[in-house]
Image (cartoon, rainbow, N blue to C red):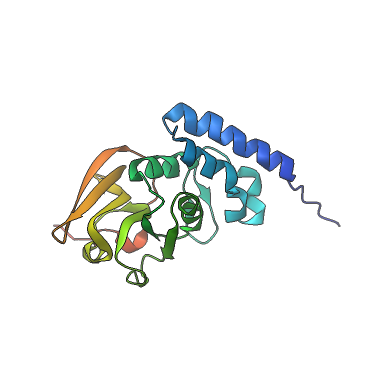
Amino acid sequence: MTLVVERASEGEMSKARRAMVDSQLRVSGVNDPDILAAFSSVKREEFVPADRRAVAYADRAVPLGDGTVLAPALTHGQMLTAAEIDKNDTVLVIGAPGTYLAALAAELATSVTVAAPDGDWTVGAPFSLVLIDGAVEQVPTRLAATLAAGGRVVTGLVERGVPRLAVGRAIAGELSLTSLGEADFAVLGAFAQPKTWSF
């Protein structure tokens, strides 16, 4: 028996990428020309397993088969909009997988570093911007140490069980976050709240 796997052509992927920009991002308030250009040039299908390329541009998270997911394009668009990235920013992207968000950020800033949630975040620090590619239930205490004075953080933050887009700044070595609204983030296990028992 021969198994035939139908693969989408480059033209079909390009068309899907344009549709993502027009029908998922623009209509939802992601309108910065530089951010839209980044989404138009970075091939999202290259960041998912081969058997999931056909759904790479769907308006939802894409499971990557290793317990992680690629967040919806809108989630990343909202993050980049809130981040207000400048070419001079030094950016740290924390997350698993993190690489698609890092590729988008690299279209907007000159210096982008990627680190795993449990990795060494000090390489290249201090950073003017940290993007956490997922939601945190508790903000890591070591995060503030990676930021330059006045540095920004954009992340998902779980509040009362609901993931929200949140932004923050490092001031005098302290980091405070403000939530902006609900967003489609997957919780990063490394930043989950420790389970407690009650009787």
